[in-house]
Amino acid sequence: MTLKICVAQLNFVVGDMAGNARKIIDAARTAYAEGARLLLTPELSICAYIAEDLFLRPSFIAACDEAVKTVARETAGLKDMAIVVGHPIGRDQRGKSVTVPQRNNAASVIREGRVIETYAKRLLPNYQVFDERRYFVPGQGTCVFEAGGVNVGLLICEDAWFDEPAQLDKEAGAELLAVINASPFHIGKGYEREAMMIERVKACGLPLVYAHLVGGQDEVVFEGRSFAVGPDARLAGRAPSFEEKLFYVGAQRAGEAIELRADTAPARDNDADLWDALVMGLGDYVRKNGFKSVALGLSGGIDSAVVMALAVDALGKDQVHAVMMPSPYTAGISLEDAREMARRLGVRYDEISILPEFEAFKASLQPLFGGKPEDTTEENIQARIRGVMLMALSNKHGHLILTTGNKSEYAVGYCTLYGDMCGGFAPIKDVVKTAVFRLARWRNAHDPRGTGANPIPERIITRPPSAELRADQTDQDSLPPYEVLDALIERYMENDLGVAELVAEGFRPEDVELVTRLIKINEYKRRQSAEGTRVTHRGFGKDWRYPITNKFRA
Image (tube, rainbow, N blue to C red; front, side):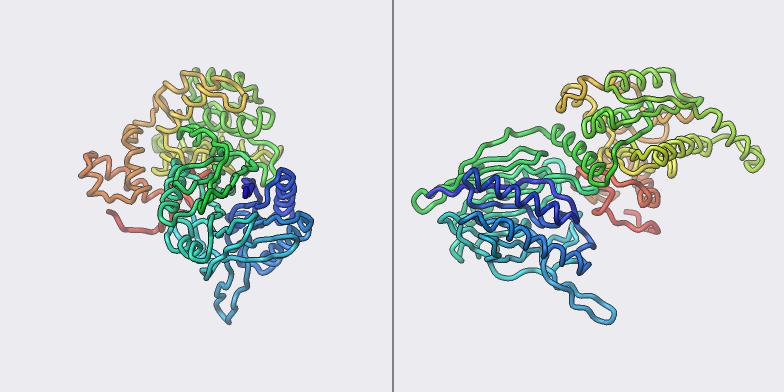
């Protein structure tokens, strides 16, 4: 007995039930022609993940129901093939002032035009970016079905991270676990999943196939990297990361065990994963929201350089417009480096001096400023002039404006509201400054999409970073060294260490006081910031929910 399993590692679009169903149908027909008799699609593949409050709309659930019927109807001729499709089911119980969710995060097994089994996810995550208890109630029971002579136990994502659901499937007769997933990427998460599923196989004694989603959805990105673990708790195969793939796994009976075999994509380093995650997050945000092109302010600094390289890798040079907007404080080498980088990548590049507008603003405001000396007010005016110009280009040409701020800046408010924060997407919003430098060096050493080798001039990487909003300015005039700042952000913001713990670790009390105070008082800015791809286990987005008005300090 040999069962050929196909994992449809596909990129779905939230709310495009017809398009998602068509992808599943096409994958099923292709896999069937290749001899597969079990097709696994990712968690909630019919509607895509994360659909958020769309789950609260009865019409959305009804559209999902119709899409499942379409998949069943159009695959009816695939004899003896089982197709696992993820989708929401159920209705709300409505009262006078409250709606109680009675929906499930479910998966159905379709065979020859009929739904033969439906399973509801038992364990609902409610941490980090997950809000599943807002939308769903836990399922009960198990789902074990036959495919190609093998009894397959079905689990959905979080179910496989705990002992009981897998053990219940085994007790119900399962010989193989099929786990369908939509697990958001963060750096290192792929290895965590493999390690956890190896532990699951050790605990329950059943091999498993892990089917995972790929693609970007607002701030989250899914890297694919589906895999199989054999009964010996060893990795039996792995699909590529960050690409759509029909990943085939062979299941063969060997005595009482089911042995698994598949191709294994090579392991990758974290910087390669990080680059591809940012490229996919940006590219999918642009395409899925109907934009054709992007524009950004290219300053000659490291952040805008990395963002432009990401944009070209994601979209191609012809869809990227770079604008250099020098002020009186822009260094000549910044202009030279911006021009050179635009030349290397072949993007459209324009220069617009903001000096006339800057002088006009100062003249108009001078009577109201009462002779006070120049300070950050004038710095912010420059940033806001640039923001207005970029948004004008967006309005006139339909570009999506990319903001170029990094996580270190968003953390401490080293960015100007309605200035350099203007735009629709922030590609490196969850990347600290030290990682931005590391990515620049990685991209100069690699050309993964053939868009241009060594795109970032070396001087951009080696110069001390500066906002260039006043004479002789550097970032470290007002911030600790980035190595210190980023270490504090990781510990305080991402891992919830307290002030006393940070000091006990050896950080200078004055640095701890400054950074934690700035993180707190700049929450109001972050609430008004653009969406950006989440690549750490905690970003300034769905999994950071702090009040703006807040007196707590510890």
